[in-house]
Length: 311
Image (cartoon, rainbow, N blue to C red; front, side, top):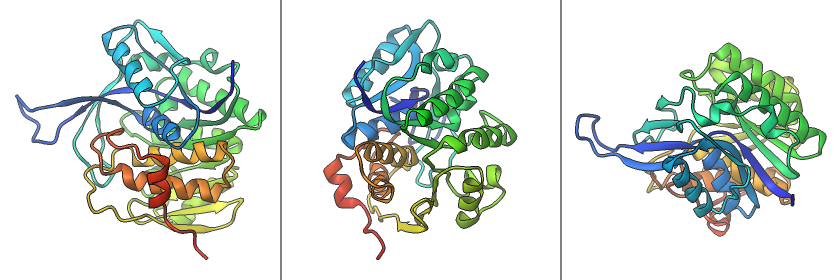
């Protein structure tokens, strides 16, 4: 098998988007999203040969998901078909990026992910993992840990987004996964306060960064909404402002876009700070579209929007 630049492991979900009051007869827009698809789409747009490793239903919805994967420039070869339903969620437009979605994902196709899906790990320059993937099932958690270990051993970059969702897992279990994965990670990207408060006992980006590094990660990028991204670790401390986006409509998936773009640029040889800088630019532009993949910017657009490096 030829080499991938980026492999994203996780669940692709059916997205039901509603921008009016929830009531009988409300209009819903059907789409496909989930942190794995959002990150993979961003990685592909940033120039990386990208695959998403997941399982989707062996049904018409699964067929539509694979068509969408291909439309986004993602390679579908690592998608397994499973005779189960696909996970789904309902979301309103959200400019904070912190709204909790309504999920239907128990027993979903992607919850069957296990170590056999990721081992042996295909040749790749970077692997993107998340706390959401680990929370799908016991076997999915084991797959996340196995992938992190295998990628690290092979010299690939490992990027982990804790992406804590209290409707999927407990803070205690999410902390345990974070601690187990961290020593293999090139970069961890927690949000503050969304991830930092429940998992790291702090609402301070500086303290959150120190806590993640204490777990053994090489570097950390703390996202603080529309304010800034604090980077700490191997490159030292850097603060990147988040560009203002006047026509923003929905922050759903912005953190995933940052993670996917950063993974792509790392795999393609950019230094860590430059990769994250481009990730910040892509995330800032992504909020102009509705839903997780409503707007995935091109690399040229991302480069133009990325904040300048501090002197």
